[in-house]
Length: 222
Image (tube, rainbow, N blue to C red; front, side, top):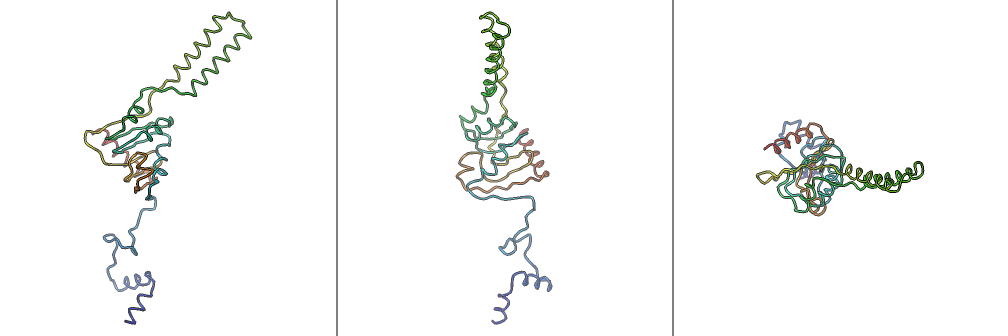
């Protein structure tokens, strides 16, 4: 009994070293024990909790080409995608809310910033014509209206979101941008990323990012 007490008081590292010397089999890859944790890759990180949006929103708000796969998608992320004009989104989802689908499939939108610029330009043109050329009233009114109309036409552009609904229900969930890849249990919904307790893994490893892009292409062409 005294020997066992002395052994139990030794640190785990000393016990492991002693067992290695006498060729005692140690649990490694095929076992998962608290004091012998399975080694993880240095570039992969994990997140557990009801705030997975802190990681997932990095992808949705990034620039470039973004690939999203989620069984469910709601209006919260539909708005976020439509506001991100720096990105081109490709989305695979089996169940999209009606409001979210209408918003994402809207073919054209009007940029408030461009309309404001066009309005200011028309006012400046009107003032310049009156001051320097003293043009007739009809022409001076018609020209700024034409400029405003042209600026309105230029402000209309195509949607930045392309959607595919697969024939079979898809349960995979992964989100990929140029610098980050995310996999896990969180759906692309407000509840999934802000309320539900979810577990996700994310990495900036180029090999994993390319592998998920290839997986997306398979799902897209299937």
